[in-house]
Length: 194
Image 1 (spheres, rainbow, N blue to C red):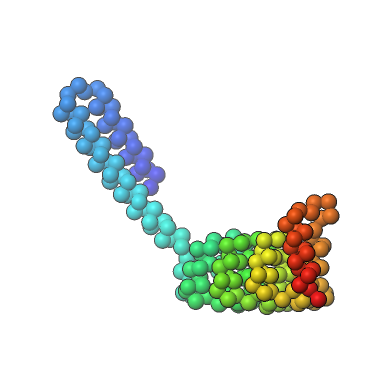
Image 2: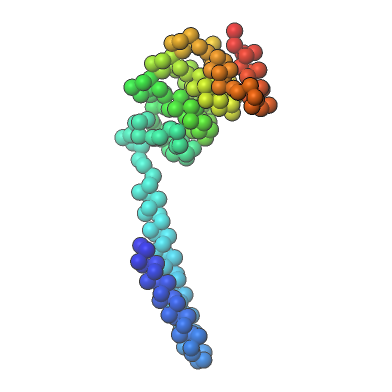
């Protein structure tokens, strides 16, 4: 692919050099026509290669599972494609974690929104009793914590240690670095907790 681009660029440069050396209008028109054809075919080849690469890069989810996707960094488009293909968005891995938990912990807003919009269960608990809300709160991911609260995540679920999302949020907040967003999320979570 790179060799072909270099080769076509070289032809284009040589064609332009011929144009510069020639005073003849006919030669100039012929060179322009060659240059146009080279550029046109080059653009078509590049576009075709780009399409082939894009097709190779997009995984097929028909036989995939949730383990085939890196939920920390998965794009919204990739998540939507997986959902459309029928992937089980509430499937738990060997540690009991769901895609929503993984995306919430990693602060992957696009993936969290796509999963919640497609009825991902925000109240599933992993082997340690943690939920997506607890994961988001423990990492200080305020926007995702707010999203999960908007989707009625249960604020009173406790993990195996007896801690709730509020406990984790309190722990993750630094007293010297409180932002208005942190105070707002904390106040909302505290108000909703029993």
